[in-house]
Length: 267
Image 1 (cartoon, rainbow, N blue to C red):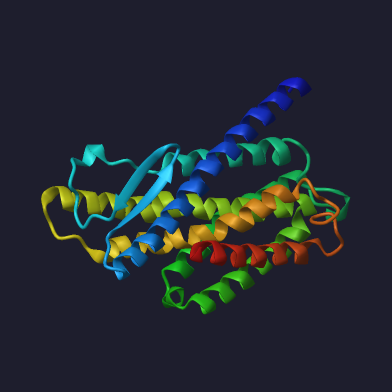
Image 2 (cartoon, rainbow, N blue to C red):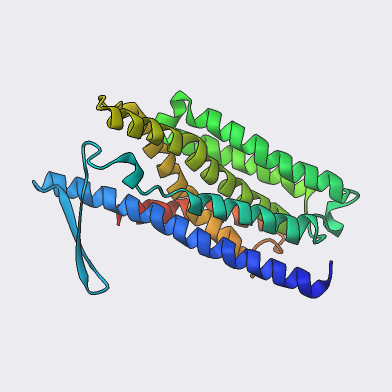
């Protein structure tokens, strides 16, 4: 491919990826904040949140049922899909087609072997996470976080032996992005569709549907911040993936991201 064309393609896809991610993460954290405010308002005897923005006043209140036709509902879903698809496109452009998947430190590993390992880590990572999120351990926050972090460390160590340090960072970020996107499309949207269908028929809503979707959305808020750290890390190789303790720095960034997400959720 012509270098100029490749550069423009990389730039356009990166613009799409970053802007879609802003929309997705912004929406996720807005609703996280809104849920918290509505809980506080309910505790104070109210049921709505008042806001001011761009010269206008707005009020939001939670509904116990569907008061409009299903077709009038706005679904927040394409931001996640656009972010994920553009992120995978960047992974292919920059790493798989760009020759950055392996380097001298990976030894005799071939590009094909490294690429296969990277793709396998994304697929296996989702299935392991999904099984863990459906287990009894998911109800215990600290236990779930400890097991999840241990599995992430193992994934990092394996990838670190197969891929370049920079590619290892990006594949951990791609794994987090894959988990977040599949949470939206596989574990959040389907129960929401069933809730909408039940409400449209006038049936009683199953609280478990909303609880399960909210649980996965909560996980996404904790994955979003370290993913953003990893995205930015490619611009600071000396401090991150290029450091001799790069993998442990990555582990620290993940923990710092979880801590930051916890504070943001309480704000």
